[in-house]
Image (cartoon, one colour):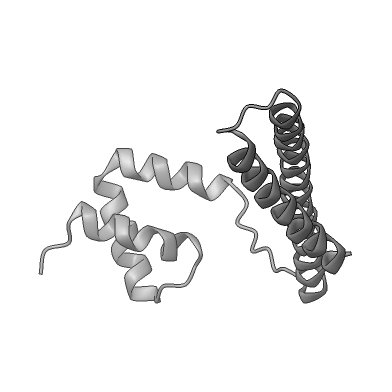
Length: 134
């Protein structure tokens, strides 16, 4: 079997981590003597310290708690945004309904009342959801 550059490149991470057998290490060393460009790449890679970072499980728990806290805040912000949008629309359509009643616009009275009612119901539902979160 002929050893190609691709095979050596596939083995380089293991070679640099010193996780190959002596025979494989010798085979890679022999190949690097013939391929100067690849040898320079390996030489530069060996200069970079190989440090394996292990994550402490306690740090991971703290990160998960922080993530959950941020996630909860984002969800609360979403619900408060919905609350204020529904509040504004409810007030707007209620005022529109009052204006239609005041000026006696006969065709617009019930539809604006229905839309205003729907927005008030939606506002109440959002408010209940926010109260459950708190």
